[in-house]
Image (cartoon, rainbow, N blue to C red; front, top):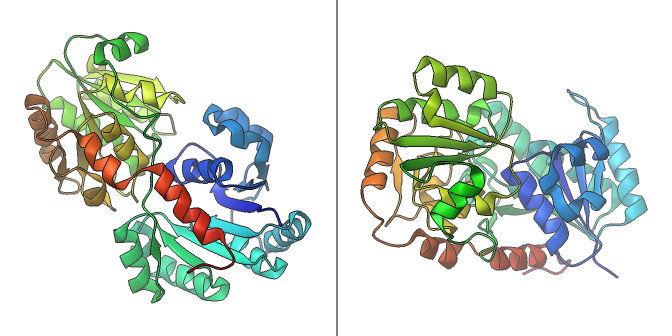
Length: 357
């Protein structure tokens, strides 16, 4: 029987979880499908050009806010129709709806992928996750050692550690000045770069605050879009750094953007194991990041700096230090040794097999 693996996410929009699900749909063998609980397929595709080849395999189920028990039955009916050999759920909502639906539909293999640990710190959320896991009884995978450990402590269920991986043929070092010219950025001076959704959890306001105390030739370049863009523009104006902050908007050409940076900044309030940190380092860009989620695992200890969470002056100092001295070791070496996408895809393919050891 031909493989057909269904990936289920909450809302198919630009983000690390969604990027992984997209890549698994395309890269794992079989006639695979992608389910988004929220949104309709046409609208989701229109809003994210980076969805690429997965667009033709995307189905949106239009879930509204709140608990929608009938969605479990609808998903189960759809799974009976398409007959997947395995279902992968990403995050809590997909676990509840997709995991239960897969069991009702008799899908042979259900895999739940845990991407971060911050939501497990909430007692109610931890209880929901534990109850859902014990109902669905999926195979568990965690994208970081920190997530695997937190999941084990919260649920007393073991998880396979499958580190996030990136395409090292796509994310690679390139000429800095050429990258800046292509983006319309000045070739002179120093650039701190950020990439991600412009939402409160991503903490880009702290990157703008850190910029204020850095020397005047340093600029901040932010690639991404979201509900906080207007607030970030106003914050930059209030702090007197508007001319030093550049917003690139939502981009699908990130391999061409990272090489324009001197240093990558991850100012998040909460994270799992973010792909952006791996992508930047694969382009030989050193990283300064707040110590959240699995950042300490993802950051090369010889080239990057992990800063105590919420310490904005510490972030400013770390960025300044990295701009002043070249890294002791090319950060790409750290990614090559641990986070190659080919290894990741192979591990997830193994997890999807009926017989897994």
